[in-house]
Image (cartoon, rainbow, N blue to C red; front, side, top):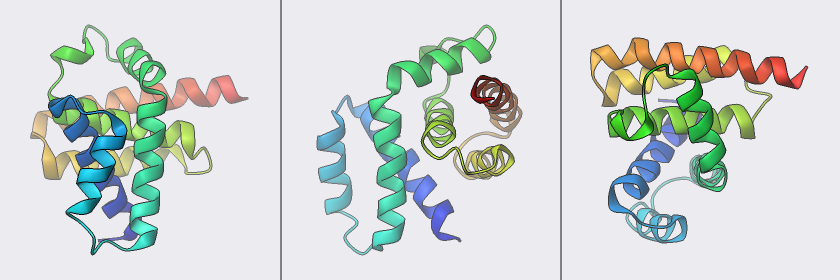
Length: 139
């Protein structure tokens, strides 16, 4: 597994921990990395960057996701799915140099690993719509 994929998976796990445990970002970072001291600096750095962007811009990210996930509220989405979406949208916002297709493909592969088969199409559709919207607003 590549460095970036591992980072994306770790960011998802941190977001999931914050979401389900109701912990603030600093507490999540502290406890999460205390248990994973063998993770390389490059993997940890990118995971932290995604997590920080997702938590710092949580309200904007959730609003974007809800706007593009027709008829779905965040609290009704499966916890894994909403956090995969949060991590990917954070990457759209924080790393605009990463091609949209790469972000979407990585999110789909992570969904295949951590979520249900039905989630893959949902995540693909939402991220494609969000990504197009963000690209159109940057131009």
